[in-house]
Every structure is written in C-alpha cells, then in structure tokens.
Image (cartoon, rainbow over all chains, first blue to last red; front, side, top):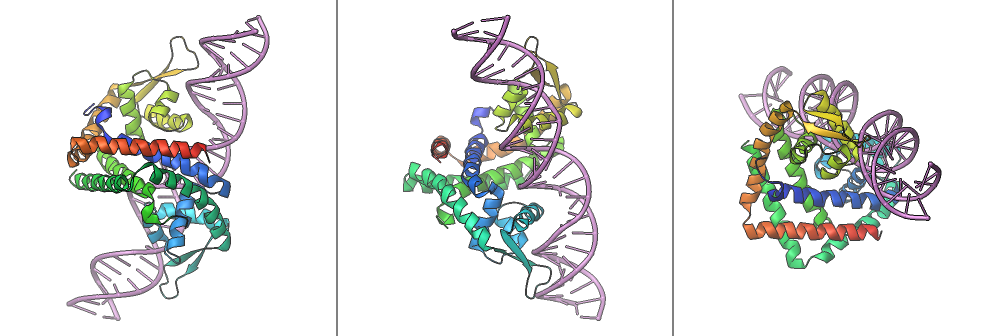
Length: 147
Length: 147
DNA sequence: GGCACATTATCAAAGCTTTGATAACCATCA
DNA sequence: TGATGGTTATCAAAGCTTTGATAATGTGCC
C-alpha cells in the first residue's frame, strides 16, 4: 500500500504495547484483576478521591469506559464511590482495603515487568526512548489535527 | 506503589500507542472503517488468501477476535471467505474490490500519520527507536515467562 | 490404520472501548 | 436572575478482545 509495512514505526509501537499488555495480564491475574482494572486501581492509589472522569483521563480512556470498569470494581468491593462534599454531580472514588490488597498483590508482579524493561536499557537509553516516544506522540497529534 | 509512575516506561509506550490509535481512527473513519478493520484489510492486502488464524496473528489478536472482525467485514462486502482448495478446515480470505477501495481510501490518510512520525525522526533515530522497542519487547517476554 | 499432535474455525461469556446522547451541577458574566 | 460554558455521571448501541471450549481437518509416526 502507500507505505511498506517495515517502514511503519506504528507497528513497532503496537508490538511493544501488545507485549506489555499480555505481560501485565499474566502479572495481575492472580490478584483477580484485568489490566484496565489494575490501571484504574493504580491511578486511584495515586489520587484518592478523584472523580470518575478524571480517573478516565488518567487511564487514557473515555469516562463511559471508566464507568463500566468502576461498576465492576465497586461490585467486587475494591472501590467505593461517594458523593462529593459540595460538588453534587461528582463522585469521589476511593480504594477500599480489599482494593488496596488486590492492588498490592497485582503491582508486585506488574513491577517485575517494569523492572525488566528498565534493566534492559541504560539510563541514557531510557531517557532516549522516552524522548523519542514523546516526539512521536507530538508528531501524531499534530498530523491528526491537520487531517 | 512498588515503582513510581514516572519511572515506568510502560506508560510512555501506552501513551504513544493511544495517540496512534486515536489518530488512526480519525484517519480511517471517512472510509467507514474501524482501526481493527483497517488493520485486517491492510494485512490482507499483503497476504491475499491467508487464513483467519494467520491473519489474527498478523494483527496481534486472537483468532476469535479476528472472526468477529471478519464477519463484519464480510457482511459489508469488503472481504470474502472461501474454502481452501485442499485444506478443508481452512478458509481463504481475500479483499473484494469494495474492500480494496475502502482500504485505499483509509490507507491514504493513515499513511499521513505514519509519515509524520517518520519525518519527526532522523533515519538513525528511527532505527534507534525500533531497536529500543524491540529490546523492550524481548525483556517483557522474558520476564513474563519467569513470572 | 490408529494415535498423537498441531492447526483451523467458531460458539459462548464476560469485560472493555468508542461514539452519541441526556440530565444535572457548578462557575461566571451581563 | 437568567444565560452560557464547562464538567460530571451514565444510558444506549455497536464493535472488539480475551479466555474457555468444541469439533473438524491435516500431518507425521508407530
């Protein structure tokens, strides 16, 4: 087609991401979590009381998608949603103790994956990869707005 | 948690991939395609007559997922599935002319995104990114098998 | 020829993801 | 006070994705 497959960097990015997702799945499964659930719990542990919409943004999904994930997490008692003290159309979301335990278990194993990535590269290479990916991100965003 | 978020390279990879998917969606929408459909059509154009299972592997999804994508594509007349000449539990999958036209339209725009990525980096940087991502991939796979 | 293995296609179920849409709430401004 | 704009939560619909499972087909070996 318009550009040979082996010139498309998008494929390399996708491949790495797929490997990452597959690994994360194996890692978090003993905690009974899916990868999106784990991501939500992790973001929540960093920002207790955050709103569902903000959590969605942190996890790079739409609010509607996050509603579904949270519903399942809430049903299992891993998170609780309570009305905001003064902002009445906002729900504050928090980890329960059960949620914290599940997250701890999952993250222990997920971090093994992250550590393996970090160990594969030197500090300079890590910075370089980060920079290159960020520049791709910018280029992608720019090109999209001009489509 | 076990590792600060800003040390997790997985996030950088995910961010780039999300940007890429969002861009691809905008690109392929005028052709009436979703990103998974576009990916399937693109892989098909490279390998006419491929089996559903092989196509799934090329697109980095399970055969079951690909069955769903192909069913929708077939219903819209973009692909056709026919029995293999001598391998009776295999279906050969091919682009129809309608499928080719849709793919052409979609790919024209998707390539703009890919070109923008390639233009952002020098040839050395492209090779470097590719190498770094591949090494991450290997590290991920290795760590997963040891979980 | 029978068996074991590998691969294919697809059903079922559950979870996730997007877009489109709606209603409600808050803050700001005229 | 009413209008406007921004944000939140969530319903609906369609598509996609995984795991688990089953049946069928081909290949190679004893």
